[in-house]
Length: 265
Length: 340
Image (cartoon, rainbow over the protein chains, first blue to last red):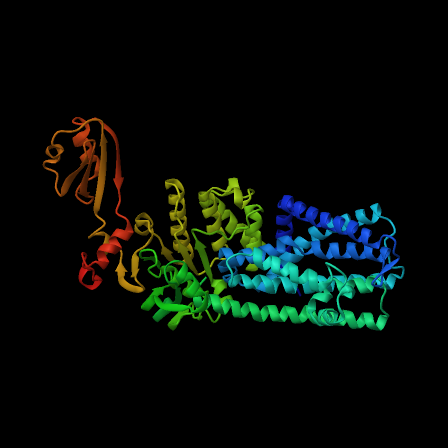
């Protein structure tokens, strides 16, 4: 049973995101420009080739769309919000409320993501419409697996964002933390380039780390690279990371709170 | 029955010390030295249900540290705190249900959504029924005059509106104990008055226990019967307000700005008891007087015919001055002797 307060928090957060639409649109516009430029970059690379490192051009286009979705759905707003709370000290109010901090932030993130996600999906379909010849899975069961996997991937991403945000207790600005988070995530998740282009040792390391659950695995499912047993294994792994990061975040938060409650804000 | 019990409460912070200049900053990268700062040093007090207590002291005296320990967001180094039968830092969430906090410098409202939306969020946070919510909102809206900004986003509120909205937000769940940290800072006279009478009414009708930190003597005089003064982490006075104000805070200063120099202005004060005059410049002089003996109009009327007055204003003593005097030993305060 979800307490009503968490639904209300999601609702208020959605409202705020809509009010802050200028910064949101700028942000999503920037992501869209990046995806466009990588589209043309990859197009040049694929010129005169059918395949590169196991990807066809059609698959690559699908890859770009999915990594765009993954980059934008859970983004700027939720990330900045947690860090800001810590840095400007308004976290004192959160400590004085009879609700769980981590769940409250998740509720807010979900709230803003519903709106942000909707816009991203519209943009993704626009992309699909403008640039034809994008690989689309045929089997409906693949779609089902993909959607489950994608939702799990966003949960994992939230876990990463949450943990990184808590680092703000030890820093004085959030930009460094957010950039570090983005750099690490996009490199190791496969958002920047497919993991299969990495040297094999690095690939192995990536598959151990939680980041590959964010982009690499959902795309692998989408491109139908695996049989159903493997897919279930992947979904299990993603679920494991989502839960593990949640509990790590909880523990990390309690340590951080101990630190501020002992040393003051 | 006391609702707040504080015994031997101490909070020690470790503060990093950095040597001067670039060299000091560089050294600090590798070896961190710390000094211990006793923000709160072995304090005792107990507060009864329904009391309104002013908790005052100069900046950095340990007021906020104490409030933070009482509300559970700071863990004491040693000593004992009990609020409403709970140990705040151990039972922070339970404690949160029975306390309300207003930080005058901060807001808990969401900046970009209407005030009412922030308040309904708090309704859900404390599981307040719609019926109670409506009743309490009507009460707040009427007493705090909130009807014209309930639908405005918090970012667009004036300071006075924001403070009233924050008061409503902190009191919506009818906490038994309220900590108000400078609730009237920066407010104009009308709003200040509104806030004060609101606090008074809440205390009277709901028996809410209120702990108030402020630098505004007016707040204290109007609201509190009891005063606790803390300085350098130690409580230097705990007793009835009158014993402080009767002695020190009687003095008022009336500043006159005049068009041209007044010859021997002292002559006009003849016959008025307990006042003295100081000439600050040719066109500015000040009269110090005892408010229990004279009123400002007594003095102003003496000068009306004699001087061409451009402007005058009254300085009330700041509570910080009172505290300073108490601490410097200029004022002897012992409530047991005084309250005869």
